[in-house]
Image 1 (cartoon, rainbow, N blue to C red):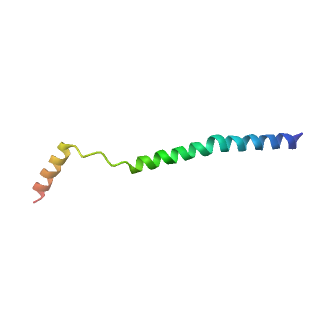
Image 2: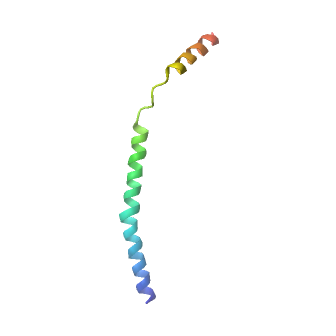
Length: 59
């Protein structure tokens, strides 16, 4: 009886792992890869202006 319960538990755990956990991990990896591949947003104009002012003051 205990062995039967143990086998049933292992089968259920394997099904949950391969049906839910593996696809979820693959999806998260694809989302993270797409996030990394995205180009950074353009620098705002005020930041560019402040950078130019800083560089001029350094000289």
